[in-house]
Each structure stands twice: as structure tokens, then as C-alpha cells.
Image 1 (cartoon, rainbow, N blue to C red):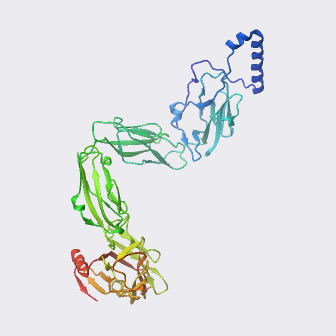
Image 2: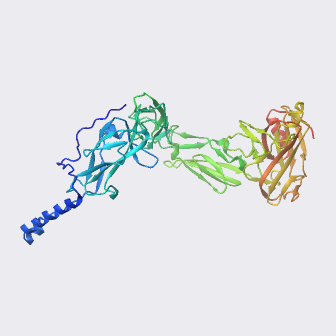
Image 3: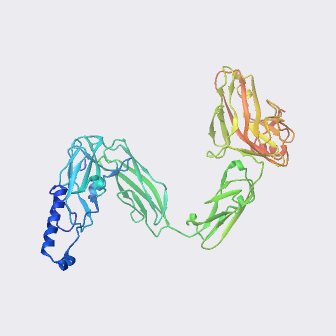
Length: 525
């Protein structure tokens, strides 16, 4: 428990009047009498030269010592709260403004004297509470109402016994700061009903970073470009519970040269891949890379932020990085062609083909596991479907191929006797199943790892509605899915892996891609 003792009031340097608790009307009447006597004793000239107007208080603010201030926290209503334990007593002090105010007497009140009381010297006594109830302690200039706005209030929250912290978590918006930057730190203390909601902050290297009693961290200017700092939060209840946060303080160093990895130049990306993070090097190596200026030649094709390129359309785009101090720059050109679809499950934050209601899925690095659901007592279903719109172009990339496991092979020993796979879509002018209904791929390659590559051709196969696609036009598809249904006869869920789904220019490209994965295949169809 923290014991609190406060020295005598030190509100202003001039003498102070103690509250006489006179009624406001008496105070006003006395002033009027004094004014009348003054008028009677003075002629007009004296009146004009010596009369002084009364100065009323404009505000009252609590003036708390550090030992109390560090306990203050803000609750979910935005109120300032002071936690106390039953039996504790503290003396509150205040500052009255302006310091030239004529009348300086104040009145203290407590909104709930069953929780805490306050006398006319600002002495607060904690009586009883479960840590949730409170008393609002007000200090108000005499003759004013607490609702006038010319008062100060503080919630006093009382606990019958101390509840110690068991754990602390430090929350920070960043792990790195530059010299001169500031960041607000906060904590989460467990249990939720711990008596003290604030902590003591310390820094392992105040020359690199300081942190004040309110958790405001300030990064200092140092000679070193990169300085590690450990920030520690310690519970105020004497339990010894602490938490630490590792930060890095950097100094601003202007980049002189930047070079984007040349392997990115003239590369091809599928629109559905979403984005690409460009690798680059700088001189000096340890410089402030956020100062590098990134620009795009066509924001309708791609935007760029700190080297991360986000695709917004199809076409060619040049991305440039420039050092502002020297003017030196580096550029690469990216191609996002119409009709290219490339899903290889390499990004856990962005994959377009997954389950959407008919089954579920689990992402793995390089493949997706699809999990079926029971459509009836003897049928399982687990569809692979797009989660974002897909853009196809029969003239550019007519071949659609997907490599996945076939449950007809995988679960034959468990009694699976049939299944149906339908490439179904809904787009601008084209919809329904491709080349009819079930199992209408042109080619089926069974790979050496047991998976199958099912291949379709947009120039040879017709959609149920719209026919063969126009080879000169890009088509947006809102729905693009492999309906994987009618899996019979089995009474439990199944799994199958999907390794990739892509479009190609030719069948030969598909064959080369499979070989590039280190697989061989036999042609089933």
C-alpha cells in the first residue's frame, strides 16, 4: 500500500483566507456597505482616482503532489479518478486563478459521504467501497455553484482492500522512433479490478529516450544512428510486477543513393496478387528510409507507399524512388497484364481463392486445405471460390489450370465412389458452367505427388450463357468457382489441398510450370 502525506497548503505566495462559510447574500451585503462608506468619505475626484473593482475567481484547479498525481487515471467517462484504500487519508490542494482574485475562500463538498468525506481544509478520508463506487470531491469558490464551471472535481474511488496487479502489458504504436519524436505509451493491468490503474515508467537509457509519469515517451537526439532502449512499467502497489517494451531509437540520416532490386524490373504480376513489396538498397546503408520519395507513373494501374506497390488496375507502370537531398533515383517497370490470374498461396494476408460458405479452409505456406461439409447424409461438398472479382481475357491468357487433390483418388479406400467438379462463373455477358456441367475439363494430368492438374481453354469451351468468350475483351467475373460437390458415399468431412490456380497463354506453359515444380505427370485425359 502507498502511504500518502501532504505538506501544508502552498496555493499562492500571498496570505490566504480560510473559508468562513458565509452565505453569498451576506458577502454581497458586506461589500455593498463598504462601498457606501467609501462613497460617503470621498468626493468625486477621489472616487474616480481610488476606487478598485473587485476581481472574482475565474477557475480552480487541483494542485496535486507527484505522489498523488501518479495514481490519477482517466476512466471510461473521461473523469479523473484517484484510487484510495479504506482508512487512507490525503489532503488535496488547489490553485485559484487569477492569483489577483479579491475573494479567495472556497468550499469543499463530497457527493457520497458513505464512500469518502472531505473537510474544509481539503482533507479526504476513504471510508468504504468495492473499487467501483466513488465520491466526487469538489472545490468551489465561496458563493459559486459547483455547476458554474468555476470549480474542480475529482472522483475518489475507494477499495476496502488492496487488489494487487498480477500482470502488465505495455501498448505502443511503434517499435522504432526517430530522435525528437514522441509516442504515448499505455498499459493494460490484470486483473481488471486491480486497485491502481497506473504504473511507474522508467527507461534503460534516458540519453536515448525518456518517459514521463504519464507514459509519454520522447526520443532523444544521439550521436549513434541506432540505439536499443528498454522501457519498464512497474506496478505501484508494491507487488513488484513489471512489464518491458523493447524500442529502437534512430537518428535522421539523409539517404544519398537508392537502388531498387533490378530483379523487379520488367516483371509480370497478376492483378489478383494485390501488391508487391519492392526490395532496395541505400547509401548509407543505415539511413532514414522514410525520407525516400516514391512515385508511380500511373496511379490507375498501381500506387506506391514506402516501396509497397498496390495494384489498382491492369497495364504497365513505372515505380521510382528518389533521394530528396541528392536527387538520385532508381526505377523499375512492372507489368500487370489483363487476364493473368496467379494464385499460389504465398501470402497469408492476401489469397483470392478459398471457401465461401460451402465448406471451410486452412491456409498453409504454398497451399490451401479445403474442408468439406455434409450437404446430406451421404454427400459432402467443399467449393473453391473467388473472394474478389477476377478478370479474364481469352485473347491474352486463355488457359485456366488448377492443381489440387482429387478426393476420388484420395479417399477411394474409405468408400468415396463419385464426385462432381464444375467450373462455374458469373460475369459480364458470361455465366453458368464452362462447357456444360460436371467434370468438363479438356485435360487431366495426374502428377507424381498424387495431385491433379485440371485444364480448361476459354477459346474452345463455351459458357452455359454467352458462349465462347470474345478474345479481344477483358471480362470481369464476380463469381468464379470450382463447385466440388456430390462426394459420395461417406458420412464424415473430407479434406483436399489446392496448390495453385492460374491462367496461361498455352498448354505448353502449363506443362513447363509443372516440370518447374519438380513434378512429372501422366495424362489421364
